[in-house]
Length: 133
Image (cartoon, rainbow, N blue to C red; front, side, top):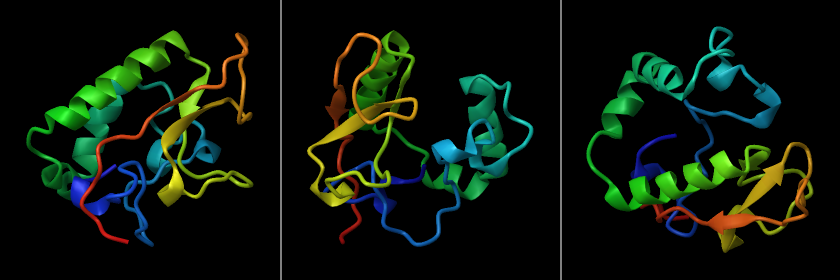
């Protein structure tokens, strides 16, 4: 998470920054951003903790971005209908690389393709960020 200025112009879901203050990977499971007290939190509680614990990042992200908000709302709606899915940008043994992606893959817990209904799903990339390669 972060301001659009940190995300790629080629893939708005990817940032090439070496250090990420706000990183989450599926290996972290319910220890979001390394937190050990958020495993039972809903989205709103996680958002409140995020703003409290990352005030600089939250301040950099203030403002209206209706294009991104619309994209996120649509993605959230899809994930509510397909709760076994998780969007990802990087994974071991996955091609293409983030800067060559044309869509955001939606992974089934631990698998790269298919779920209980047999669909291979992807979702349009988010709006481009402003960071050059």
